[in-house]
Image 1 (tube, rainbow over the protein chains, first blue to last red):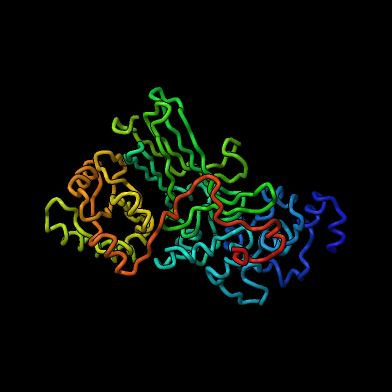
Image 2 (image 1 turned 45 degrees about the vertical axis):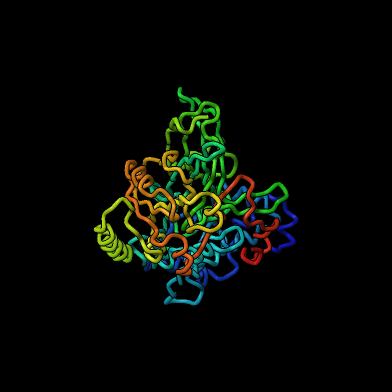
Length: 290
Length: 153
């Protein structure tokens, strides 16, 4: 289908046409059917990954429908057509024997593409100096396998981020300091625009009611004017936040929660897949009262 | 494996340093702290020199804990803490406060002067985040332009 013909369609119809269109290259040169005959385990493993369905998720289809030029989105989400990646998208069209993917450069083609900073943030962080690369976390223990895992895999996010908290006394009153650090080799959240990590901080009264609360979202934000803003948590030292007068509203405890979410939108919107990364409470002792 | 070798060396250095005893926390050289901070489980670093000195340059990732140990409340999670202190800071008070909260306390040997002299990186409050911070804005349709994100950074 030509670009002009795609433009002539309504947005949902154009999206559908893009997703269903067959790859331009011959199947023998681009695809996975031939690979699976001799590599059935690799094929079966990869079929279960998020990459194999990168163009099939409801979130992506929604974003694709809103894009002005959705064809470029598919350069990474489904380069050969269909609803996700296939073998030759990463291993190339050079024919057998196909080379192993060069990590992290091979990942960066898409994971440093517009709307992502995953590989760039990895290269600028401390993980390379520790000798760690993408596969240490995303393909642990089986670097030749294809069972790539990420945040959507149950348990993958366990222990990935940690909160630290303190309250210091200053002449003008107490100040609560919260630090968010994580063990990911790249910024958190990695990946692309829809995912986010939320920090929710609340001062609690003696009876447990919320006296005050604040939320901070880390991730990519789609601004009202259409631009994107990156506010992820960098690897290494993480980020810090200060909350003056945490005892306001008769608060006696301070609670901080860190939540990983897959769906865009506010924290109050339902996301059945969200994961609580960490939760911490601190008693506001007498020396901090006003 | 690299983690294991580093931690063994660190443990040996700390045992030797701790053998000196006293109320001052055992020292940790700037180089050892920098290497520890690059590990996956770095220590908590507390700067107890006061806000002005903290903002003038501190160890990356360090938290401003104030100058008053009696007005300090830890989060109760314990673990290793490295203190950044000046010559006049009340180290015994800080050590006692943190040890009571379950922390193992170390002192940055030579303070920030030694850290600077070692050519190690400084931070000036740049990790603080407020709602509305704009660290990186890219134009509309970047993905659709098919340009690398770093072109716009």
